[in-house]
Image (tube, rainbow, N blue to C red):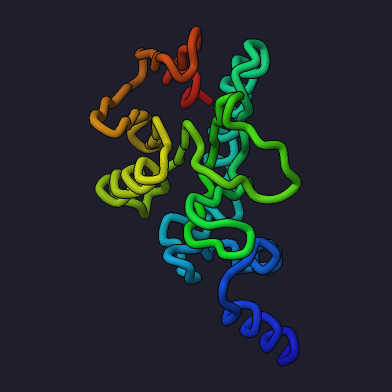
Length: 201
């Protein structure tokens, strides 16, 4: 036990944080809540205990979005859709990770896809975050702005309690409720998402 703790501490103290180190830390039980900002480990308050273990509601909404988005993207050869365990390095490279994120669902346009067995270096074109009860709207809006800073085009914030989805762009925010459709726009041509389909379980 003591040896395991020493090994974990040694990993967390290493700088710069490389992809190899980040992957090792991510496999340690209880350390999934750690993110990287400004080249240092931080406790990501966006990930509460339900998110780490993927609660039923969170997991089901993520599955619905993956299926609906994925089906359209694959059928139209628009790019790739990823689940929440895929790491995006927003700033840095494999030898020095400065900023990383793991959106619950993400989409990368075909021209930006770089097949790899490791992390994705660059921002997703679409990032989807499923908001937990402990997270405030202001906190999540700030997170959306963080994505935009590194090149993301659109961020969806999914609010299960309110049954609404906020669509953020760098210059605008629009909230969609039950009975409304979210257009895919230029990013996802031909796609539209029924808000009711996401929340009617």
